[in-house]
Image (tube, rainbow, N blue to C red; front, top):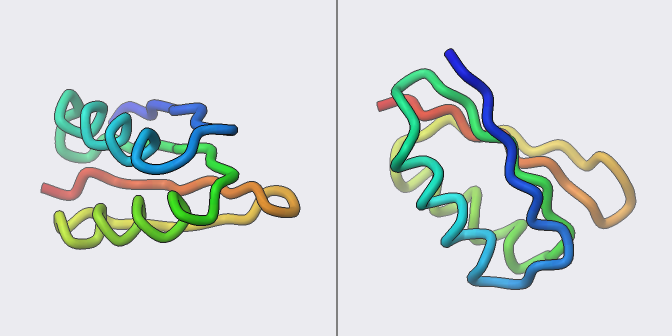
Length: 75
């Protein structure tokens, strides 16, 4: 299992979602992607997309208005 990170701070939709999708497609099953975001639109869209793909998603607010979305490529 490998862990990858994406820094999407300061980027608005759909950039974080496109970056996440591209990176996930390069990863192996069991790998984890940690995405740092600070845009509320991405906060809604990225986890929703990941869950629809069947991936495990966890969200942690690391600062006021800044989140880490942890996506495990489950399939």
